[in-house]
Length: 571
Image (cartoon, rainbow, N blue to C red; front, side):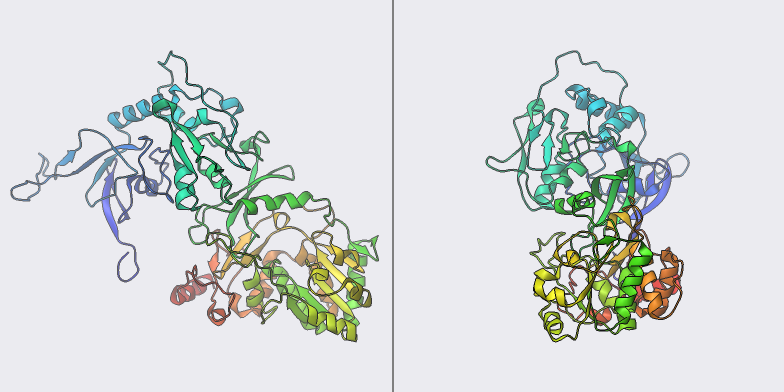
């Protein structure tokens, strides 16, 4: 990168055409940047890991412009063009950095023969079990052997037999006979997860992947090794043999485990989620996510899931539940316990509710030990959203003893609770009998069981919306599966509640119209729109909040001038 912040580019020639690529790019990435379906096949190379050159699949032919060694002048051919000195043998693209004037051939006869040879060697001991392999449909060996292999085998000897169904750790199973020794999993554990637990033993075709003696692959990022394994050697024990990937729908989402806001993909079919994997975003989570974050989808089918609107414990229609809620709120003496797990859109409605009822707003802090990678101390996905929307302007509270005192004094008559169990936050269960409780949440708890009105909420997998992560990046998520039958998206339900508080008729809303209101009333989001949120998110101006103690700025990629330019472009 140059001194003024722009990316320096150089010109190289790929298959006869001059292209500009960023300085320092390796050949695999350079060819990928050309587009038009061009790709250098590879197994061991990964853009977020160190380069080792194990697989030798990314062979290309390389040449450089020729110059006279004595004079330094260019050597020209018969047409007056500078001659290219081609290397006599192919070179690996992953470990070759593009240089000005470099010429690359990706489909010459020499390159094709090299790839055929590598593919033949990889398949010598590889089992012919594609029909039952979990990796089928997303296997690079399967794809590249079809594109670059000979199409037949000259091997007649017996294949080596290696361990199958080896438990490497609590979440990862190894079929070692499929392993092509790319070492991606080894490098990931050492370089990213910072737990150097994997390695190869033995030599040649008998090399085997294993854990160090007395160790297991049990760190909280172990399933990332499954994601980056180019073949079916490493498999998720939980997903193993559950579903063919080509049957699954992929939906972009955001991990709600912490304020990091890792980008994810939800893999579902016919309303059922089968797995969650990371989605690449270089500004947030690169290509990774935590194992614990992947497991959150299992709460969708939890036995304590709230699935019906109720009043006084009796199942009611939405209209009846809304009418009971509005009556309680209009009576006054309201306190709102909001949630930093609610979306930006929902928090906007809770702010409106608080303004129209005069309710005080409290947010509860949920903290844990951060791991310095993708699990932050703040275990909520949208605390920054609550700040930006104006739902709260104070620190989250560890307990609600202040509300408990107001309940005892009679100052609070109605307690509106969003997805929190206040009995675990300093409010004795017996105190709840002195107030009317309106509970909005996804799962039952001690508070919801004492609530006069229960308004079931949708989980992040079942709705659309947005969060603001620890770096003040607004990120959208989409609905992957339907919620419980008859349950409205939260913002539509909340519109039914807040409109009567101002003697208004509830409007028919979608997220586009919600954002029209939101951007007009909330200055940090001025000029934003729902459809305008990029797939990888958009920076929000955090200037007014940088001095707050819970704002993590170490990952903050924020340029005030770039932000203003983006705002102008959006407007």
